[in-house]
Amino acid sequence: MGKTHERIDGRLRTFIEEQPMFFTATAPLAGDGTINLSPKGLRGSWAVLDERTVAYLDFAGSNAETIAHLRENGRITLMWCAFQGPPNIVRVHGRGEPVFRNDPRWPELIGHFPDIDTSQHGLRAIIMVRAELIRDTCGYAVPFMSYDADRDLHGKRFAREDDESLSAYFTKKDHVATSIDGLPGLPLPLPPTPAPAP
Image (cartoon, rainbow, N blue to C red; front, side):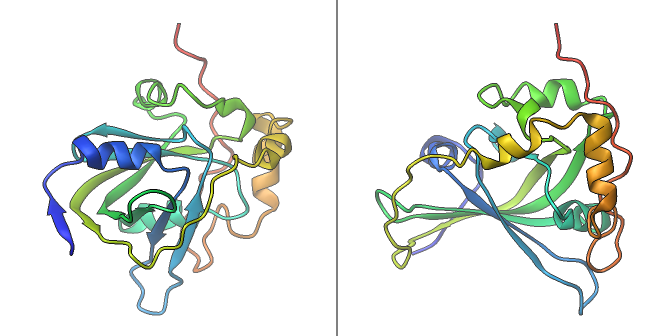
């Protein structure tokens, strides 16, 4: 039923790139810590960088649990599942890290996301994940559901923010600079948005 893959290529890569959403799961090291599971949408906001590395854009929100967990221990699982077409589930278990705006890798990494207007969504970080285990399974119990379109609400909400107002918004939130369990989350104030590469 399940199969382990050495790399993300061919049909596996195509499957990941064609899905309209995926899920992320992280947890702190503490045995009583809060496990986080998040849906990620907005087409064009994730990319396969090479055969063992994927990345996605981390946009504005009311929490920063994934960032906090990655800063503490790096463990993450990404999951894509087929809601249309042949049944399939792909999981990438690996080590992740948040790349912030002032990281020298930012200009190169942001170039992997040409199909999304990042200025509309309060881009906070780029999450890079290096795969340690790549598996696909049947997905026979995943229901058929149709994809109609991405919601435009996130873009409408955050397109009006600049770096200063976005930092102020995050500062007012209980679990952006610090996670639910008290771990360091998003560093504030945000570094300025880098100018686009010429």
